[in-house]
Structures are given as structure tokens and as C-alpha cells.
Length: 117
Image 1 (cartoon, rainbow, N blue to C red):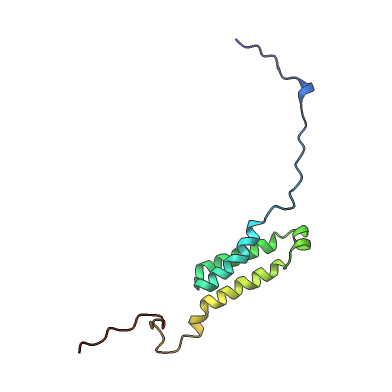
Image 2 (tube, helix red, strand yellow):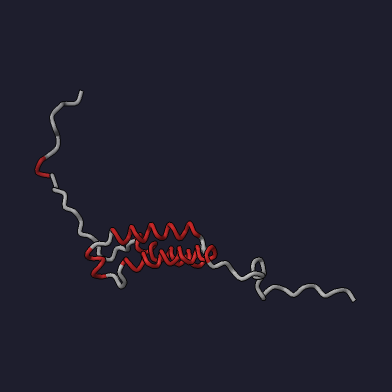
């Protein structure tokens, strides 16, 4: 049976020191808050627009003083861009497209077949 004596040596204990924060570490939340509104505008996807609003508000509320000092644009601009992506996504509800353009293809389609002669 093993003895109950503590075999650890107190002279080998190394105290914990917290590592310094890396200044070059990227912030994924602010990157998502910047790119998701563009994806929502390009695709006119309402769900992506709402997710971009959530990410932008979260990045704005979690912005530190260091991020405010070093950022090229304030985080409130990401919130504004996210709301603009929602506006673009919901725009067809309030400003419907002109009649006759719904379901019409682009001008890059192949011409119709020639009638038999």
C-alpha cells in the first residue's frame, strides 16, 4: 500500500503568472460585424441581416478602450451598416419593383430559337 505522505517538493513550486495579452490578436466578432452586413446587402437575405445586427451590437458593446484607440472606424458604424443591410433586405416590401420586371431574366440569356422556315 502506498504511503500517505505527500511526496511533492515545495521548493519546486512555480507560481502562476498570467501571460501578457497579444496586441496583434484579431477580433473575430468585429470582423463578422463588418462583413455580415455586406453579405446581407449582396444576397438580400433577411436572416443574415438580423445576424449582422446582433454581431454589430455585440461588438459595439464589447469594445474596449484599446480597441477604440486603435480602430480605424468606431464600432457604432458597424451597427449603422447592419441596420442599413436590414433596410436593403426589407426594401422590396415597401418599394416593390416596377410591374413587368418580376421573373424577367437578364439580357445575357441565349436568344430564342429561330422559327422553322
